[in-house]
Image (tube, rainbow, N blue to C red; front, side, top):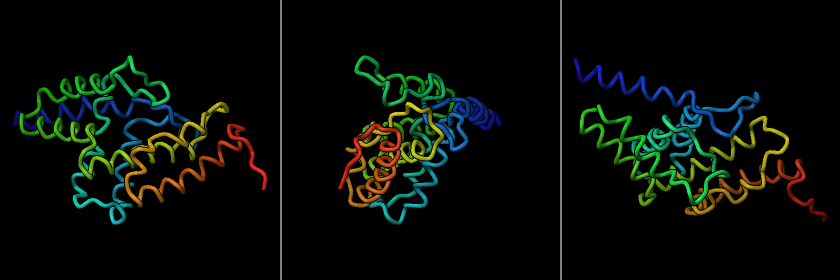
Length: 195
């Protein structure tokens, strides 16, 4: 019984992700939460599973769910605000270790191992989740009701090293970038091209 209570306590603790706001806005104009980002990331993994060069969808889904769990304590740091002086990985690792400290050791180790796998980006599953993570963010930026000064042009380069890894992700990125360019042109962030 105590083991179940510990797990319930963990679930309650990570509920914080529902309140962690990201820089992206929903189509109705409110800031999205990390939990909402993670939900759509999982859905994208399912929708595109047959297109990805990955064999283990369960592992992909686990990586999706775990990848931002460390943000439950210190929140999200938007890519545009990340710098060399801030060790986002270290902060998230410490926060995740704190969040999982009371879990049964095998479960704690699995969660920490999945997070490390995602961070290192060495497996096909981790690389796929990194690519999907960047694409979900850009799609949300394209779909969201953003402030007038939103920097769409930034997204044309954001996460390229992950989305250029496979032919599928390159194709998907090309489609997403087309929409991003449209938004950037509309907001005068890119020079208009004439024929």
